[in-house]
Image 1 (cartoon, rainbow, N blue to C red):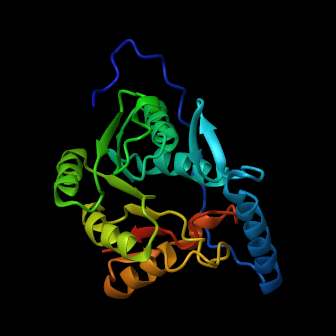
Image 2: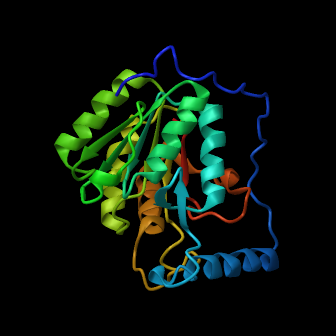
Length: 243
């Protein structure tokens, strides 16, 4: 992973906008509207046969995301200026490239993305701020690599988007939470499944892993102020380290 050369294009100026995050204060009826639209939006994916609502691309590279969550990520990168972003769950590399491009625009930070499946390796994008690691995110040797990079990076942000089963996500939380500094963020993606409020048949997943993690770790809180766009695939999924 190398820093861009001095011949890199001039970056756009960074403005002074600092969003005032506040937890959405919705009535029961308003929340029901949000939940029903969320369920409609997600369910229309229909295993690839529907509207492809969460099938996005960045510079032609595919990912599964909500556009509002991507917008939030760019705001957070500008605000937090992480030295390293660790992503678990690479797929075709679209989201990792997006994060690397935002880091490039900011002029700071790099991305390491981890996935046990390298079947898409041939089509994954390359970027000087982006490194791919193949292996299970919870394997000791993989976590050791991530820890070594984090130790050199200063502020670290983690995005968990690999195997969404509860026990795997909880294992990831216990490991990668140790890399987050006070005030830093750990994002658990797809907490919306298993009926929160969509895909009720999924079974215990990220939402339940967050519940278990917060029950045993008082150093983090679920900061719902990052849900100001109302539609997010990650409700209660943005965890902020408080101590």
